[in-house]
Image (cartoon, rainbow, N blue to C red; front, side, top):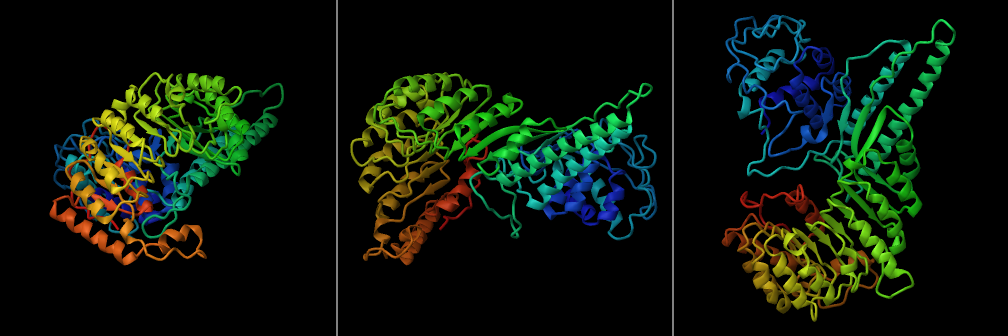
Amino acid sequence: MDTLVFLCARRVVAHLPGARRALDLLPAELFPFLFRAAIADGRVLALRELVATWPFPVLSFPRILGHQDGHRDHHQVGHLGGHLGGHWVGHWDGHLGGHWVGHLGGHWVDHRVGHLGGHWDGHWIGHLGGHWDGQWDDHWVVIGWSLGWSLGDHQVGHQDGPRDGHPLPMEKPRRSCVQAVILAVVAQLRRALDGAARGTRENRCHLRFLDMTGLQDTTTTTTTTGGGAEEMTLWSNTVALAKASLEISKHQTQCLKRASKRHKGPTNTSTSPPPIGVDIKTDLFVNSTSFGVVRDALQHQSLLRLRCRDFHAEELSIAALVTLVESLEDPVEVRRVDLRFNNLKLTGLCVVVPYLTRFTHLLSLKLPYSNVDVRRSTPGMEAALRCLAAHLGKLANLKELNLGSSRLSGKLRQFLGDLQTPLESLELAFCYLLPGDFSFLSQSFHAPRLKKLDLSGHDFSNHLLQPLQHLLEETSTSLLHLDLMECHLTDTGLEVLFPTLSRCSHLRSLGLFGNPLSTPGLKKVLRTMVALEDLNLVVYPCPTDCYLQEPPRSTSPPNQLFEDAVDEELLAAVKVELDQMLVSLGRTDMVWTSNLCQRGDLLDVITMEFGQSSTMGGGRGVAAAP
């Protein structure tokens, strides 16, 4: 439920003329509320005004729109109003209809945020610069904010916080809102450059650091927010920021040229110091189309500097990847690197991975679909494996590794043998692992620390079932997320794993999609898995008895064969039965779905910040999904 402060903020940003005049008068602590309100309602012009007058050196999308440590942290302002008169605003001595808000009757302690156009002696708000145009209910806004402050911890400090102690997803801003913020930063830097060239200073905006991390979903290309407003993809955001940085770089050069001409001569050689720039911390997604503009932005000098947290690259050459990796500033801030569909092969990995060792705080490295195949020995392969393993071993803080679709048969020890710290996430889907690979992993120091394990695409119908069972036994105390999709697991095979799976007491999600399980087999899985209190998500396959007897139509496109072969009425009936079982067993918090698209969204919520120590118990009330 929205707080009174937030509701008032929405009223303010809805009326731009009044808001524009109010920004110079309002307390700085209200700006995060105004910013969030403008984002929520798509107030593009209000956003530009807010950025232009931002009173803090830091503007953080994650802190304002998301949750950290269980509550909102608005630039470490903390609990607004926690001590504003001891939770009481005081009595209203002045005239609510005039220029004065009245006497606050309390102490402002350390929250002296600036004067509002009148006296600021700890007791008076002062006048608000006259009437607020009469276009919106100014008295309600003023009183509402004051009352919102007075509630302190109860409404402002923990507004919209999670009900069960777990963080909630960040709100996804509209494309137009993200663009508005970028354009506002560019406009501010252009004004600062023009002012410096004239020998004047512009101090209206105090912004020095903009955090735009986590705004986009890297797994989708087009998404929509509630109401159908289009979000900005990570690729589009990357290009927009790169172009903005280049624009400022170009304008900076032009200003320097004009300044040098103006200051020519023996009697006037002094120049104004350059304005302070803005660092933008962001996630970058680069492919062959955007490579040129991103490379130029990273390599040119600009007052708008891009600092990368998570780096994603697809369909790039080895040379292009090396160029980008070398161009990233502040390597200690790079947290994740995702290089997929780059056709690197083993030789390419041996070239690129050594450059990643400069990222000393790298937590996650994803190298799926790199076209690595070590099943057949080739000249130089063993030396290449040793070289690659040695450089992986230099990533001292690595917690997540994805080698999906790399054909690693019998070579897993060589890949992971030099790692100095245990992994928490290991994705080995479709890696053609052999029993010896499972044996190595079971005996390694990674096994008892693994929280996420993806072994999809392996055939567990025969000789790999027992090695899998041993591996799960070793990971049972730590495992949170397990994917065994398209693994040829039948009712009998999965039943063999029941005792081991039942010991995975902290398991939150289980992926079984694509396995030949029957409806009775699924019901057995459900009855077994409900005992795991933290298990919230199960992705199950279409039961074998829900397929049509006749073969799929050969004229259908490949992506429609599965739909054509399924009896939708039978599948819906199975869903209803599973729903009823969850209700009868008291586990309506568990989500059972056969929809892989829905799985991604649900898993994002469950795995919010990977590696959190908190478990997912409680919060029941979600019915089984279709």
